[in-house]
Length: 160
Picture 1 (cartoon, one colour):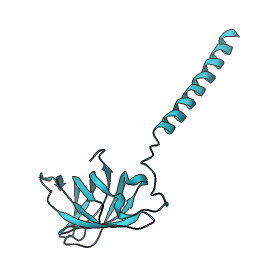
Picture 2 (cartoon, rainbow, N blue to C red):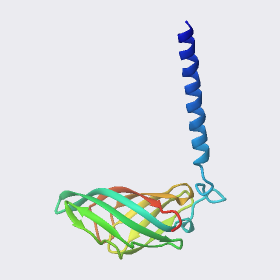
Picture 3 (cartoon, rainbow, N blue to C red):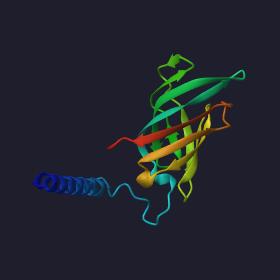
Picture 4 (cartoon, rainbow, N blue to C red):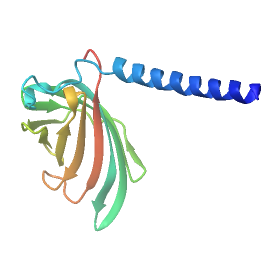
């Protein structure tokens, strides 16, 4: 009987401890930078700094979908312009080491949706997350590249 009571008390304490730890972790991980603009609306000035962008999907080559995966830097300038300082792409097993050097533009609406257009490349619909710490992308038709599809996420690098 004593053993059952001890196990029940220890189980309850373990659960309580885990719950307190979870709440503490959630509270401590909510940074003030991870909030919307003061008026609760998004704008293009929130996207500023270097983001690491991972992206995968398929590219249409003569009616054949070919898998693609990219890792690129996106330098958002806070004024609606963006540059790609570096990147690597794998399209159908062919590796392109330096995909940097591209430039483009972006828009952000008050509801945090927007567009990203890379000159000589595809266009994307975007969603800007809280505090502009992350940006989700989905490829849409347009630009010099058509017929591809894919989704990705860009994460801001701290201090850049």
